[in-house]
Length: 543
Image (cartoon, rainbow, N blue to C red; front, side):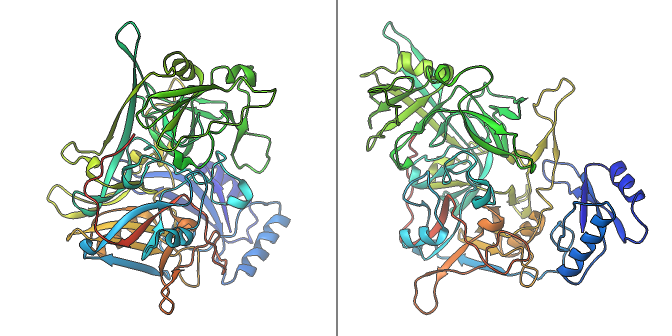
């Protein structure tokens, strides 16, 4: 049994009022120091007893409730991230002949819909596959619904074979496949596209593209490519645009340009205002479609929303305004032409598109895809996917592989206001490093080969999972020179050939909850697939 508290005085006061018959212990929750965060106590809990069975713990929970101490949760000993003696199940795939195999980023039939890793492996004829980026659904998919309404949209960078199908959360650690160092590179990636339109009287006008294949105004993970969005402010529970990544936060921006490619898989979505739904009493934040913000009515917002159709040469073919309809029926979205794109603008960005992106006009896109070092251009790679963890292993100044965790660079921290109440660069470590979960890890060996590691979790009888420092130690011990984690927890899935039939099969035991014996394979955004063949070097990125 555990009861959580934000500070020690509250925990002490709660314990002081507790009946002496209860075996209570104060637990301090501390995030260890990392490459970009300090050691930090992020909370406290009061633990009541230790029990051999869950039934005994539930009985004690009922006794606490009868004594006026309701709430709290029954947890397994390893669940809260304390040191554990296991057990663990670790699946390892090592590829040391990169010339005989190729690693690819794959997704389902289209970008906006989710699919299981098993189905993606079958669809791509993969020998091996693991889950890829985090995505637009909270963990309890069937209960909570989608954050943004499109369950396949990746959180952050997604570039299969040079096609930018998801923009980076500006500086988050990513996996680069078939890069200059071998089958795998690990780098902090950023993407930026400037749209330039010539003016009739001479000169030009420019704006940044805010995102790719996602709902306008709803940036899961934040990290705007526009350098003007260099801070964020909480307003009515929402985050304004920021260049800083913030994992699992949503940054709200009423003026954006989003590019939709044919891989989106349908017409463009209706532009919406967003808000947090505060009408629910269970304490869970859900994000829902909302047609108003403040006092501005929906039709006034749509008056600034426009879809601009461009062909493969970026010549404007047509414009479609969202505040007009044909025959009194609502506009249902713009069909994306094969080889072309639709640029959807809202707010002042929509006004800019409407005024300048007229039929017959050519738009000049300039796209950059960059890593942390100018001497190591990320654009030499054929594919890239955003990681779901900080970097785990990196060479030190002596060229020796070392554990390297950078949660702040990945937005895996708690935002804090400054003295003026503004949310800028202040942050505090949270439980990112100490949470114990199933993990999917990707690394590069010293020979340029690939490591794919899946560690099962949430199973006290077979595998409890690992914290991120433990994950880093494991993948380093297995021989990784660089490594990062992908989606974790119930996302973690490994597909291997069935030893009898040779058909793809789920080889691990993904679980959504602790202690359950049933495995459950989530539908997710994309996967890393290992295929027979020759790597592609290099594939130019497309904006």
